[in-house]
Picture 1 (cartoon, helix red, strand yellow):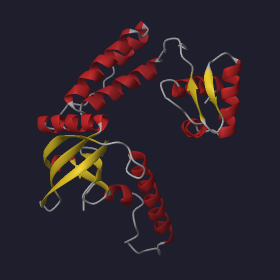
Picture 2: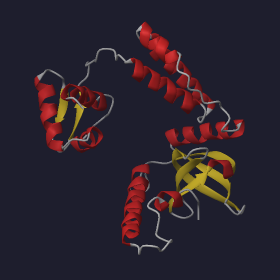
Picture 3: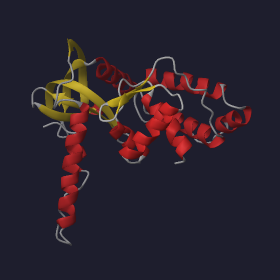
Length: 258
């Protein structure tokens, strides 16, 4: 990435966030934290009102605006492709928002880029999810955003029913299958539920606050640690023995409650 592009991306990543750490920027931009510190200092010297300090975090001062974004023909086509694919696998409300948002982007593109993007011959017919699953996905997604607890009636892979009260953390798409990742109050641990096996869902009035050890970030850290351990065991497994642990087993385990 060119340095000018990196400086632009730093401003984009900082804006709209309450506090952005150098570690986060370094990971997203694939550079060292020292490089981030230098870039931040250069931006501040150029008059960009970035507030904060090393080791704490940064934010963008009030009143700073960037010029409108311009897209190349390839970038515009990529946005259209992503929108069409996403619309086939999300809930109705989000699909409508994608359509209106894409229309706003296309309306401000140069004519050549707009014509190229609209002519993209890539389509994704909405055949993957039933209307019931789409509506359920919307209910779950909104509960994640509003931090409302859920009561689920669920069937496992053997068809055995169970009922759980959960804190919904996020929805994951696996290619034809959506799962809901949660903190399960019965098991006091992270659990995942296939949305197509949820027989009933009730959004409870009770809300929850993020607590240490029970958040999406905590779940992802746990999954990454388990996946790294599985990968380590896989490398040390004797050749020819077919039962080596799969490095992806940790994440797969979180998609079926126990």
